[in-house]
Image (tube, rainbow, N blue to C red; front, side, top):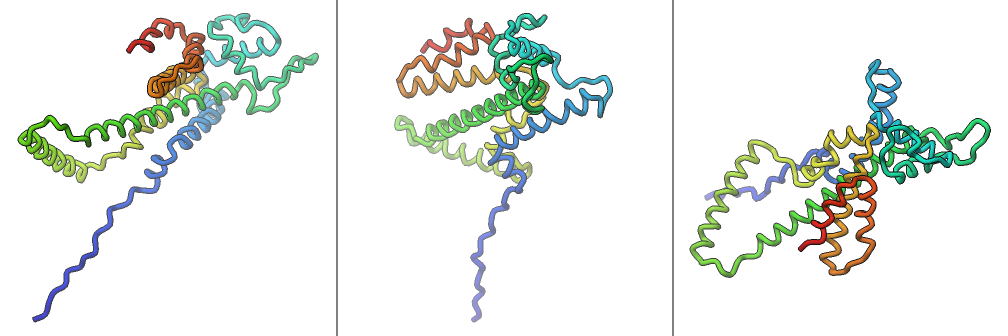
Length: 263
């Protein structure tokens, strides 16, 4: 009798689309590139009237920042600029690309891209992308630690409870598998990037020239410094430098200082 041989070839899992994999693996580079392109293109299209007349994209506070930087370059106080109520460090940072060699006509810029018209936005976009990258890393670490905790079985559970939990987990896995077959869910890496790096709200804020990206980055750095400090059981004054800098940008950090040093 003839025997029918069954093919043992396994069907390969469908690979993720190339664009999705690119967004997952290079989220920081893509997020920063998108910010830099919008930082340069949208003000030229809207502020210069090439796309819309009378609609301004750059934040009005950015003009205050750049005027204060000009005062710093001339050796004057940044608070000589009316309505400037921010830290002098911000004006000092924005004055870095300015040529301090004054002549009869004032000062000149070293290059157009390093002028205060773009330099401040460039710093804000980098700070915003770094903030999103740190948030993604923290989410991945938290997910890895939670998964390791769930994999460790509890020794105090009774055999009946273990069987009930296993059956319940199997039922949940079947339901999730059916949902994933109907609706493709994004990977965890892509979700981490969507929280901040691909979020249009912080992209819009930093590319318009708002300094809120620095205000957000500093507490994120404070959190990372404190987590490392408590894990390594080493206390150093360098861990408090981001918190001290945060006090210059926002006085609210002084009120929440106690929460960082309570168990």
